[in-house]
Image 1 (cartoon, rainbow, N blue to C red):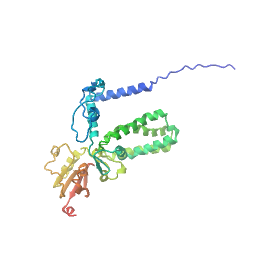
Image 2: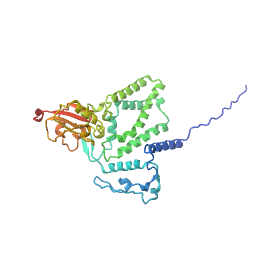
Image 3: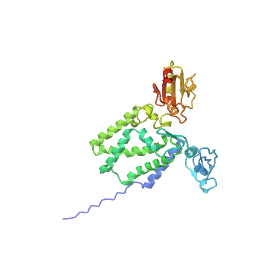
Image 4: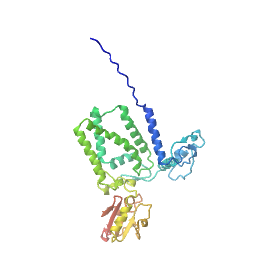
Length: 348
């Protein structure tokens, strides 16, 4: 027997090292942010900024602290470092940080507070994300534990999970106020990547997993389309009927001025609804919407047609508590309730 030796040429991997990949990702992120601001004020030295937050001015900020622009780095060598971000982007972060430091009125599950809660954003995710997403998350967890095919190397798993947990933890720690859901949005891309693991069921021909995954995706799409075009006010099935949503969350979870033109259309459709009283949260005067000769909702019970914003109805001051016990006869989007108050209602 003649043993034949076969020489196989060694093929060198062209995969770039992880550090290089990370550096490219960060540079692309910086370039994208700067492009959005047309590089306005980019690479300005840190000591040239005028900050207002306590963190960047080295002062204590409370609810009544007056604004005194300063810069804790102005006399430090650190201040000469150029900031690779647009100036307005940096100032916006500073302003947001001050809001968290001084605290703002916050609402959660029927309770008003002068500050926020660490659990707030988890609560928002539970009620504002479609239930199909959480079913996919549960399916992902089950597949990861019981099926080796759905697992990846630990460093591939942690590169998604760790940033998601860090971002969630950091955002939850900023509990100066809790009223807007938008701060939790950076967590969502990581969450969607994690649950996308269920798509491997197609590759491995796991029929039950394929059917469950497809069902969850259809649930997500269908649940979202039911609210279109009022997507900002979306709540999943756990929150129950729209009249219940204000018991859980307020603020931009329900109303951020997205239904103004719906209000205009309602008034044009029902011109006979008189007397009409309207009170909504708006930086736009009603006459700009061609809604004229309208009075605000009185704080005392009165008869007539009343349109009131949900955020105002459940405001901390309780001015319109007399309306809470009434049943609305219509709604405008999901942010305004319409009441018809008769004399007989006032006598009860």
